[in-house]
Figure 1 (cartoon, rainbow, N blue to C red):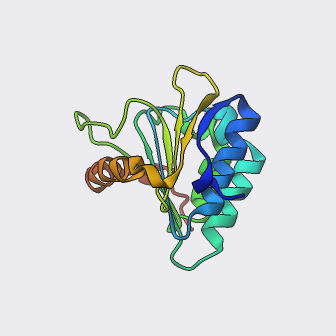
Figure 2: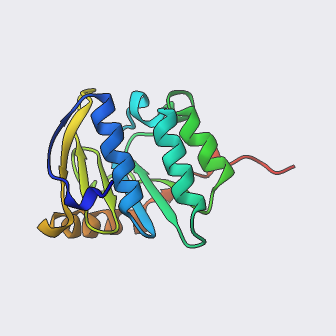
Length: 163
């Protein structure tokens, strides 16, 4: 499945999960995810967690960068994702924007390194739209994401002590 040829509206958990998995599969090295708050129904999906794990371990330089605006109760609400981060901390990184720093968008998005953007609805709705790589929208999101990512703080409180 090649997400870079997709475009259009998505509605429901299944459609968004399939699209997010396609973005992961179409990326060659880096995935960037921003969410004001992660939606547990989506980011605890075994299919999506398996896709994230598969992407993270499929290449030595593969990187998943997740920027979370409000990480309150993240370990409780998205336990499967936090566990994956704890097992693969160099491949799956979690950061929080600094207080007062501008977020890259007001809504969640998943960005593949090929420029494909999956923009997710906010307000607890499971839906969104996907834009193919050719549109140039991915570049805009990447610039905003990278700028915020560089200043964001690593979420070291989620690390497991290796004692």
